[in-house]
Image 1 (cartoon, rainbow, N blue to C red):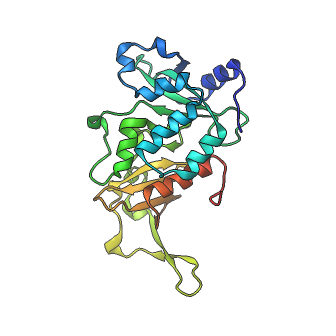
Image 2 (cartoon, helix red, strand yellow):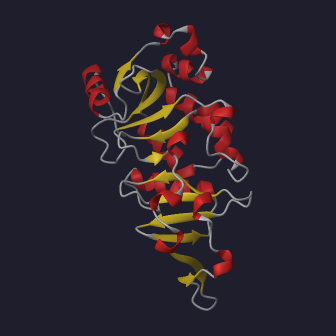
Image 3 (tube, rainbow, N blue to C red):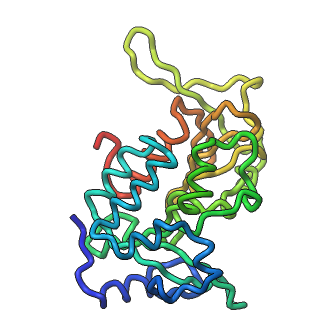
Length: 259
């Protein structure tokens, strides 16, 4: 179990490991009425609960029941501290309330601290079109906007989710798929036929790692096709969006896929 044992360590982590212009921990009674109106009630309940992680993961499960089994097990076992924070988002002084999951320096993964922004109103989700998974929409509008570290890597804030076309032209990518050998049962890579190539302007990066590799969702329709972007290649994977996200976030916690 990773533990943050002192207020001084909390202050140090929040001061040095965040992606914002500035950040300060606050108590629930320091929220303005407007700020309190932007966050779900469970964020406040978690501040006084004897088991704040239970409060958080119950909210996660209500939104996406059973969808992140490895990630939620890691969070439950790690038992991070949960703190309300006021983030200054830019030099113009614009602020927002965020929830910090403080795992501590003893955690050797990318997540010494993970952040979630306040859930987004439905009309402020810029990239959630018809092809976005319903559970993802629910998570981002009722639980929190992302689960990311100071870089930021992890499950991205909705407003920062890039279209894969930002990384190059369609011809710049190599496209491969997976096929299982009927005799050996081994996975092998196969070339994607032209009729099945994605429109990279409709591929949206949802989760990224430290090397700008990403899990991408095809938003052209509601089929939920998932691709992974790896160093100039796009691989169509035989996974649901949540299976891919769970696998990637698990790796970011420094735990292999077979955990």
